[in-house]
Image (cartoon, rainbow, N blue to C red; front, side):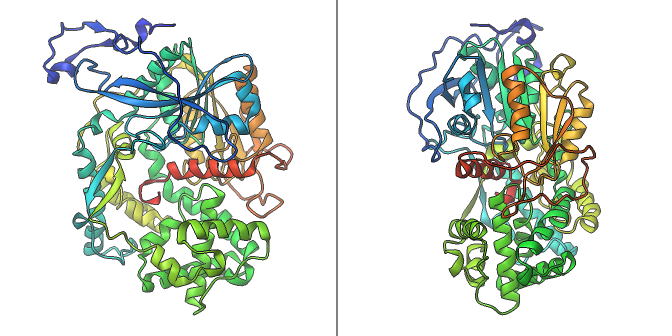
Length: 572
């Protein structure tokens, strides 16, 4: 079992003064010494696996509340899972779905099923990070936001720039920030703390290095783990990447431009190809009909803000299906019709039917405008529960911007990206976050960059291509696989793209990392060819690919999960 090297031993400074612990100035301690002797006791998992996933086993890991002061405060428990290698053990691959705050213990069994070559050589390890509870068991930490602190209005529209509208919009982010900062555990739900949990897991697994696969926010977590523990980090695959060399919050601030791009250049053209009779055959007329649907929902009691957010963060086919349903129902309502048409394509009809049942509680054939309006109505509960880890990490990892800064951002982004640009800057809880970060997160050191592969979709609406490209440019030695024309979030293992899967598997299994290359995207739902659009990817892609991957239902469920856990705040 490999012990932490001197490079990961903490130096105790004034950070411990508030605990009342007396420590000599500049003394060093091994923060892992109290926890490294525990044994992992593997047993049944609390979650129910996805259909088609392989069985996993789970264990609980005891970690300190605060790795900066391991002897102060109560301990926490983190859940981990494992699917052992089916063949000769190459190493352990820790998988994180992102979030912040996504539970990941169900991922190893699913990934083992869809990537059997990976399963043959790797022990696949999942983790429910601190603050997220135990998947299928203990509930995640939540912040209780009193509803009376929120705006009572159900007609909020961020396009309304009146003083009253802006005041009402700011009530929610202020209440969320205050509720989450009041949670006693919030200061210890950070990337710095979770990275130390990961290092303890590596020690308990008996691995000299820990390989890693992270999606979305999981790219930030993986990069910061490698930055804090460079000798312990093995090969890292960072899929749908943040700018891990810059600011985490910048990934959320980029939502207005990347979602406007997706909506105008990919989603609306797809709607005109799939539903020409309902939304029109031209993008311009489809956009006008989308506005008509927006006005219909507003008159029926669904706020324009809520309507807009349906069409942001559409990082999976299931989220596209929800957007299509709301669009179609809105146009039908505006036309005075009682229901939307069922598409002739049976695969597309099945996709929309599944979404209609899951989101609106009725089959597609029975989805009426009034049913959609009822399902989108505000929750009348006394408290609104929001995920504590999501905001504790996003707002607590680094210094935040001010309320005035976000207000100016709204004023700048609104005219250019009207679908979400007006709203984002008025709805960010980090603007009201007053606590300062307790630890600094370093950038990726040069000694690690040669072991990092970034994978990024060109039109990803949740972590924009420009974020990933900025990280790669700021970390010489990192290589990047770009996926041309892809609008989805989470590329490896879920899209069924043989180019992407091949690149990643050769890197992980054969230690042969590609350079900066471009893979072709796969067709959109119900289509058989890719429709190229202008975008930031300039290099030519390889020959177009066809998707014949097994377990399509499991892959779709995994991709939807990755997109959902990485939705931005109100989009979950």
